[in-house]
Length: 277
Length: 311
Image (cartoon, rainbow over the protein chains, first blue to last red):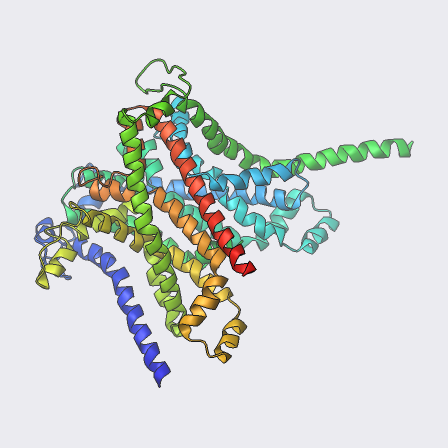
């Protein structure tokens, strides 16, 4: 009896906290359907009195000429998918090589890679900007993709997995006459699929949500990502048009929220596997 | 004949094998060298130059940039140390909340009935998926003095509107609050896993001894999750040190310069004033401070742990 009472109190507490997490998001969606006048008037009306789609039509249907939102979304999705693909491919190869193959100098390479996990991003972003600037590659997809591929996180994550991967499978394939590359593609990658998805979701979220790097490495409206584009709008022509801003932030959030909800299990697995040494 | 050829071809095969294996590492190695190792070295080099982006020449000036940062009469001194002080304030305000509330949420979730546990975990974790610019613009709106949701709610209860973003201490409260709301879920997930790793029989043994829930938490849970706690403290500290988007978008460093964090100062120096050399020197110093803080946290935690063992 006492036990059930305690449980009920905890459930109510959890529900109140859940509201604190959901209210801001609900308010964002609610505001996105209000006209600017109703938004700025304040009040607590959750259902807009004058329910309108104009914020969405203005930003999406080309009425707001200075809002190339489809281009921003394309840039973010393209950089996210391309970067993620490269990261998963090269990290899997490197981690497998270091964990299982006779890579020369691997005794030094792995610690060198892992030690850079300690290095904060601030240390590299200015020289990297100069590097791309010297090559004339600012405002290209190169800046939105390649810097993320140097992160050692994926190598670290996959290395641990390949270390504990059963040798028998590789040996069986080896006896069948498969070479290293064939063993990697046909045996190792298929059994590593869950952890590769974990890395993919992590990488995609990182690239899609990154803010400071794309903010400094791009400065033309066409090459902004969605996260930097909306920040520019907030400081520019939408400065107090909260209806339109909330429509923009809602649009920006939908794709990543879908990825998050689908990949949540993999994401949690990745966080816990790197948290425990 | 065979005996002579055999060792040579074996050495050859060995070399070929090593070469093939090296090709597995090569693509990542190239990216690593180009976008991590090279920038690191290049950054040190830039910090030793008078590197104004608009100037033709970038003369080598040795440690002069560093000397200017540490010269109390220089404007760079003020920029660096005021920014650092503001960043440290943010770290000190946010990290304890991120760790303690993260752990509290994990404990709460673990004591819920299994069926609804997953649902609440997802809800608490959702903000982590959203970008810092969306979070900042959303809170800018919710905390708006006249039209914002929070002040309208407070006014309905009969309170005066609070200048959340334009007065201290409210500006710090707002920045820390938005950050906690945003990233709490990440720490919570780590703690949930750590709590599940604590051996069940330790709790059972203490239950036989008649320990209360609080005693169990202090004597069993906390010591067991200590390494994870350290991990969360360090990752939260690093994340808070890197704070940029929230003050950049929500308070613009204000009121006054009170929330102008170091990273904002560095970005401004590099891209508004085009002083890349001294900005790089500041970025390097900031990184060294972050690494030093992590090492100190690690050392303190280890020493406490050893002390606990000998007792």
